[in-house]
Length: 209
Ligand code: TMP
Image (cartoon, helix red, strand yellow):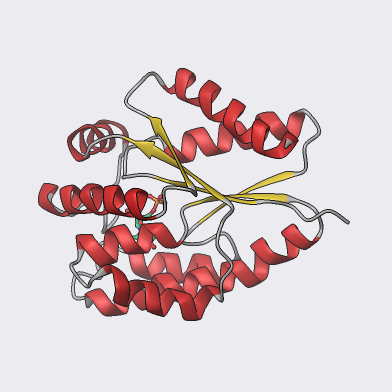
């Protein structure tokens, strides 16, 4: 049987990543494509429990390396529970975030360093990298303004300083430069319907290839 594809979505908070990746997955599913939307951190029972610990605003004392390890642990469990079995069954997995998020947020945002963060993730993912990554590009100011306007409750990461979110954005630009062959950069500062239409045709193109 033909294996499914592993496609990830990345972007700063407020990039519209979740709205866009869900809308594109649902449209493709309604057209008969074998596609499944999932998200990180979370997406499976154990991973969702780890997500709750990581994002709980009460956990103000969390050490940056503990945070990086928890994201990697959640990623590992989600990969084994959801991503790999579905791909084997021929289903294309669209994951809302994956390892690039850890490089941008923990590696650059928290200042741990991209290589150190990648090395603990290499242990977690064992070479299972996405075939393509759609990056929804909005700068930190636009992203933050959107989440402040739209979210009733901010999680521990959303609530970080503007400087932190700028480091994350700059970190993502370095990830894009490093993994240019894998990354598809989409201007997400536009109206969300325009973004969905563009991303839909990109992902459909990958599935029809
Ligand atoms: P979400 O808002 O896309 O659901 O993600 C939750 C938060 O977790 C978001 O602020 C980004 C952050 N995050 C990391 O810092 N590192 C990671 O590896 C992942 C997957 C998410």
